Image (tube, rainbow, N blue to C red; front, side, top):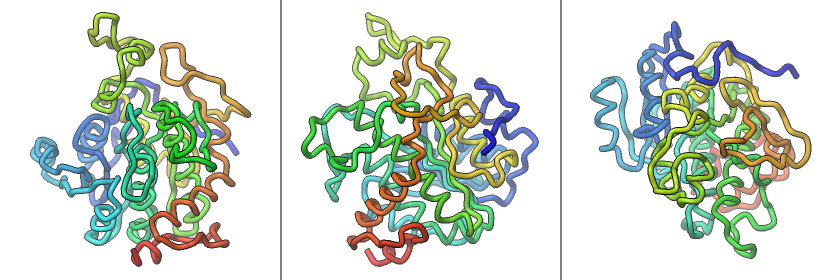
Length: 339
């Protein structure tokens, strides 16, 4: 399989990757689109003519973007609450040309769980988005060339998905490992979609945006911020050369969501506006620091068997039923509607 490359550098902005692209009439959902990288993704898509729905816990936080781009709207969505996700899906009417799974939480200092007993990073970053895209399967299919973009992270290099204890019920909770596992799960979500919905004309890819100053880092302690080069020993914020602006960090997401260069591409992982290279075996790489190696994806993050197993695990969680043995071709919509 030929590795996908594009003419855009790692420093291209979200607006630049869509230069000359007309998205008039396209309907796109961006979770967490009211702030940070999600907001820059919304601005680029709306600037190219798309009708963007900003899915956020507090729609009032999107008022500035809606004033800037009148064709945008904000709708309440709490990914950690499956009732909220179900309500969003039931209220959606018509096709969805793209769903961008952008919202997330990072490195919660203490273990927290949602109503289903899922660790909160895994519940928000992965399970909520799984429920969202499966609940919107028909909307994506009816768009004829629907796309799903799952925002992951270079942290997927740090941890495989632990099927024996994904919720840290027996092993000691570690914020970094929990976050990394959720980001590996995000890539596996894109792989799982690509294995099931290709015949519906739906593509799915995952990406890492790179490092940028946003509210996502609000739970990071001083030692981690210093390791990343984002803070000095006196607590002052730094912007080192390996950091991007939010406009640059949103580029790969935007590229996957709307660029004609990615038409038909599915089940892959991108970084720096290029498809990443697969690392065989244990990556053994520190993701995210100033000396980190970018442009790589762990073999475990693209493992089709793990993607299928995780799909069934998530399907069981949102439907309250036992997994189906025919998971390669299952869609969650019937079970989802039965919650």
